[in-house]
Length: 408
Image 1 (cartoon, helix red, strand yellow):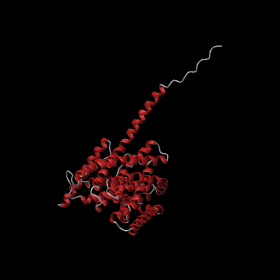
Image 2 (cartoon, helix red, strand yellow):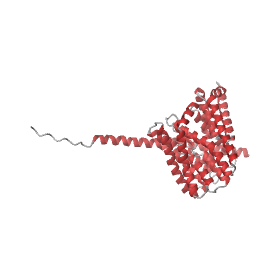
Image 3 (cartoon, rainbow, N blue to C red):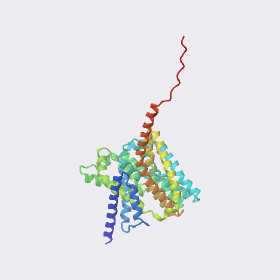
Image 4 (spheres, rainbow, N blue to C red):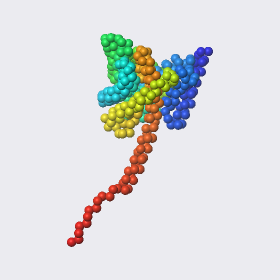
C-alpha cells in the first residue's frame, strides 16, 4: 500500500507539472517559477505535504542537476572550455568579489560572526547552474555569442565551490589547518584529473559510447555521466562539474545524438529538481527574514547584471548580449541551499537557513522572469529610439545663415 501511495503522489505531481508547463507555454513564460510554487505547496508547512515520495524527489533532483549540466557541456568542446576560462578568469574573480560582498557585509552587520559571513557570502555569490541552463535552453539562447561568457563564469563558480566548500566545512567544524588543507588538495586534484581526462582522452570516451543503437548510446551516456558525477561529489567536487566535463568530452555527431536522446529525461528530472527545492522550504519561516532577503536580492540582481555586462563587454559583445549575459546569472539555487544547509547543521545562526531560502526563492523566480522580459523590453526601447530619431532628423536645428555681402 505504501508503494501504491508513492506512485499516486509521484504521478499526481508529474501531472500537475505537465499542466503548469502547458500553461506556461501558452502564456509565454518559463515554467520554473511555477515548479517552485508547486514545491512550496507540497512541502513541509504547505497546503498538501507529500509523505511517501521524498526519496524519489531527492534522488530525482540530483539527477536533474546532473543532466542539466551534462547537456550544457555537450554544447562545447574541451578546447573551447579551456580557451574561455583563460579569457574570462579575471571575470570570474570580479564575479566572486562583487557577489560575495553583500552576503559577507550583511552577516557582519547583523553580528552573526565570521563563520556566518563566509557562509552567507557563498550563498549570495554563486548562481544556479541548473536554473541558468534551463533558462538558456527555454529561451533558445544557447547559440548566442554571450553564452560562452556565461558558461565560463558558471564553470568558474562551480570550480570555486570545489575549493570553497572544503574550506567552509573545515571552518564550521573548527578543524585544524592541516586537515582543511588536505581536504582542499583532494578537491583540486580531483578537478584536475577529470579535466585532464576530458581534454586528452575525450576521443576514447566517444568510442566507448558510440553505437548505431540509440538505446546503447542513451544507457552508456547516462550511466557514465551519473557515475562520474557521483565520483566527483565523493571527492569533495561538485557533481555538476563532473557531469559538465563528461558533456564536453563528447563531440561531433555523437554529441548531437546524445543531446537528442537525453533531453526528454533532462526535462523531467529538471522539473523534479525545482519541485524538490520548493519542498525543502517551509513557508512559515520566510516572513521574518523577507526584508533582509529582498534587500540582498536587489543587491544580487545589480551585482550579477554588472558582472555579466562587464565580462561580455571585455570580449566585444554588444549591449543586448551584455544584458542577456547579466540577466542569465541572476538565478540562485542548488549550491546556495547546500551552503546554507552546512551552516544550519553547524548551528552558527538560526536565521541563516530561512534567509537563504527566501533569498534563493526570490531570485529563482525573478531571474527567469527577468530573462523572459529582457528581449521584449529591449525591442520596445529600440522601437522608441527609432521613432525618436526620424523626428529629430525631420526638424533639425537651423544653422546660422551668413549675412549677405553688400552689392558693389
